[in-house]
Length: 413
Image (cartoon, rainbow, N blue to C red; front, side):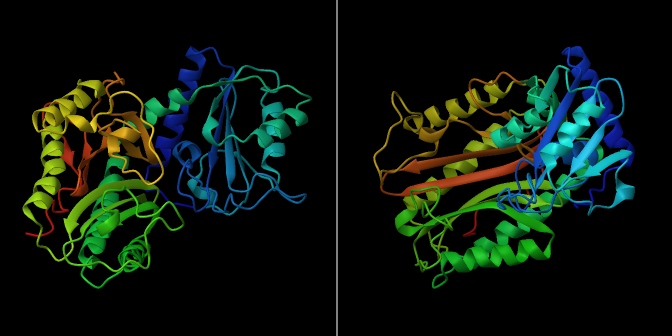
């Protein structure tokens, strides 16, 4: 279990607010689904509402003895008491304020029983967590209910709640950002001539483990692969054998969970600390772009307006070709810049990578206490790819609080 330092009453308040949203949508109840284990993604829904975390890996295939390991579910009727279904009873019971907690080796069977016991076996159900709601689990639940399971996607109900952080969550996110800064700094300091990309990642993993963190991913690229987001399309994605050489363009993007809450930052430098004029201009460009973006982020501004501000900066500073015109297809081995893959300037963070997305199409209005990872990668042919990312808290009447300001932007000064 991840023992979140959130007052217990806050979990019940969250469930009450979500229940009211479900009632307004005409649902009889909600099925909230999450995946735990070491993957460090998609665990946030159930954790946000109840507190326990499923530690077993979802990589274990279903067998005749168990089904749905690492998955957990909250059954939240609009009228009546909730039921929490977990795969193991190994959590601190006093940290959970739900009376009816059931541990099942066959999680879908347990969920079906809970739906029946709460009267939702023939109700209109909103499903939250459909990204990890496997077809095999749906079929198993439906079979237990005699073929009935009437659900509709309802992720946005909880996404909107999770995007605005409580004071307790902000405290945890400040702590996560502090650890995240140390994690990235450790890897940047390790990126010296003669080290390997594997050495760099290893030093970062050691630091992160010692400070209560677990990575979701580490993007490293250097030298001949410095125009890519990742050195390899392989496992691991960093080239653990590649020796760093003086003058190599090098970037690292690390994101992951510290005690449940995310950190996500990018820094770029040149190995040996002596960038060429072209390298320095490239590295400084995303720093300047993000600095410009942060000056325009505050409550009441739309995500699309932030993205428009970013696009205007790119155009004004000669990076207009970062925005693709026409088809985005590429042949194997061709350089792909950041905006060819998905034009955006960042995203929300919390118990994972979350909405809102800073894109031209997203008209979500920023609210106080949203936490954003504001990022950009920029490329110059023949020079490479450079990225920069900061984690910030949205404020009402001022620029955002920069949680990662302790991580210096330039590593050669």
